[in-house]
Image 1 (cartoon, rainbow, N blue to C red):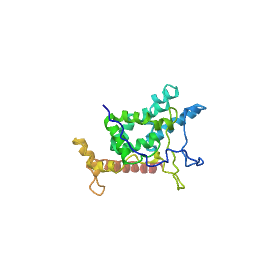
Image 2 (image 1 turned 135 degrees about the horizontal axis):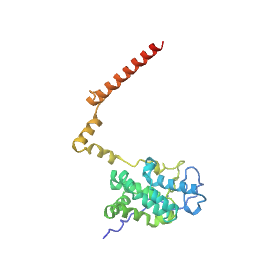
Image 3 (image 1 turned 90 degrees about the vertical axis):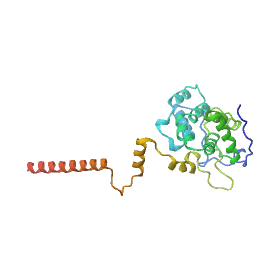
Image 4 (image 1 turned 30 degrees about the horizontal axis):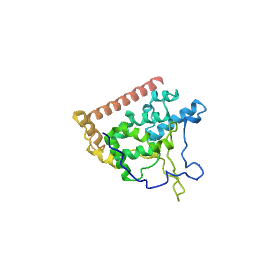
Length: 245
């Protein structure tokens, strides 16, 4: 039996009321399949979805999901299903979920899927309970099936950062896609991760190796070989030049 979502009160109306500001460069662009004119528009929409969910730091060709893309192009799945596939893929799990605690991961997903920041720590706790009890798939499904997502993005619109312009500010917030996916929690875990076995110990010695100390024997041997080869080549070249005269 899954636990119900813990109640929390929104602390700001910024994302819950319609804005009157004139759209400009500080506003996010909405990409939707409702007004596609050509195939290049679909390419732009797909890249916008990757940029929104995967972060600009992870925009690599190896992280793309060609099967999901082909299904979206053929109309077999909606943009919402495409977002679901990206957010539950192995690459997203390996690069984001596995390297953050539940609170940080909840904040990232609320930013990228619901298009806003978390209201407070109570909302982080509420969604963290969902993540802990239902897993990654259940957590992503809960976000995508929420009334907030449906009201703002529906089935065919790529999520975007809503209301970047804040009251009494001349510039908007930093785009979520440019925020680091790791925080101090991940940095604190790095010294605790010790490689296991002989190979791991050798790799750790290499990482900690100080260039001011004596280089490894293998590196010295390779360096000497390169130096001797270079000297021999220069001697042969100089001899050939002399014989030519």
